[in-house]
Amino acid sequence: MRPGSGSAYSTQPSQGGPSTRTSRRRQNLTLPLPQREPSSLAVPLPLPPPSASSPVPALADLDRIRRVGSGAGGTVWLTRHRNTGRLYALKIIHGHHDDDVRCQMRREIEILRDADSPSVVRCHGFYDRGGEIQILLEYMDGGSLEGRVFSSEAQLAGIARQVLSGLAYLHRRRIVHRDIKPSNLLVNSRGEVKIADFGVGRILAQTMDPCNSAVGTIAYMSPERINTDLNEGAYDGRAGDIWSFGVSILEFSLGRFPFGERLGRQGDWASLMMAICYAALPEAPSIASPEFRNFVNSCLQREPVKRPTAEQLLRHPFLAQTSPLPDLSSLRI
Image 1 (cartoon, rainbow, N blue to C red):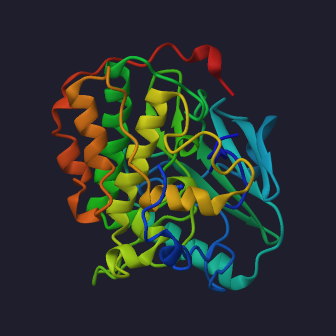
Image 2 (tube, rainbow, N blue to C red):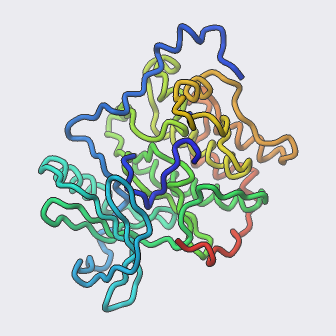
Image 3 (spheres, rainbow, N blue to C red):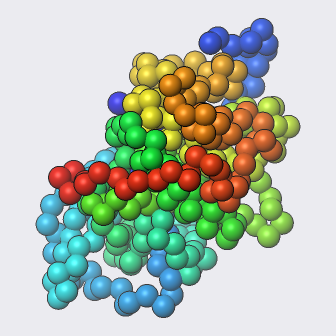
């Protein structure tokens, strides 16, 4: 398994050698993953549908067809609405959550309720039954893009355009995802790619306060998020999303995790973090087009202020070439 793997349909709770300053810097690599504020969420929250959407189906009207994902935190079922025949993914979060957690979930859902983008997985309903949380999601029959390889730059551009469209929409609304990675990018048999799993998504405050809690997947985290010294403690979640997006797009091209396939497999997270913060930055293959190489390099800038925004990347020459993804009907999960 690659570092940071885990499908958006999974319920598991959810990066050359170092410079001569490595020994001094190593002690400053901070990643307080086990540390959570009491009120912080430990379950994934996708974007709910706009308030004008159809009524939430009654839980009793959903027939479970088969399990499509599972983990320590719970289970995801493919379900069919008995009256309409419509398919959904029902994510069941195991365990009983206290009132504070459930109230925070409702607040975040209310904040996100009117978010509506074709590049973001929809949430159709939220159920709280005896403390057990169940979330009704749009069913993406192609599964996640984890482990997929795309040799065609036109197809890579098509994926990039859809993901960037979703990120641009979210960032305009002061929403950051903070866990962009291949397993959180879902696809359907029509070739539509959508951003999923907002387990660590946050609304940026009106004051643009930085998002400082270190949650998410280490392998796809930006350098300044791992080592706060690199940017004097400042963190722009939108720039962090662009870094994670760049790592993911390069992974689709290379067919492996860009910072080294073996990193993290033996639990050597320190080496992984040192590579992200100090090793030579990964690049697209030399045989790739200049446009793609420049596109990847633009995303993987260690200084966050040098990374383009999602809106700016949508105007990049690389995205001028797009083609549909191959037929994915045989890859349904």
